[in-house]
Length: 121
Image (tube, rainbow, N blue to C red; front, side):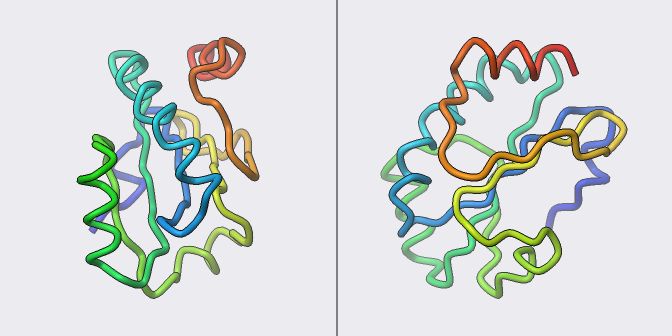
């Protein structure tokens, strides 16, 4: 179980995704790369999978070398909490716990503008 309050003082990139979502699969490598690059600056990626099937979820993480903090919300309760309706959806939460930005759809997290934005929070 993970709570956002555990990451107060860090920038959280809260990403909602699924193994059956092609744009999610497309953006995952750049999320992993950005996390590696920005971890020392206090940026944490929390990837929340809405997959119902635990075995598909675990297989995907293993097969795609997803080295991120990832949890599975098989009941999809987080969708209701965050108003998530399209995947991937990502929220940028600042060090004080305030949502600063929301992205709907795949993002290249290694793009200089994105990295610069995160670095300035």
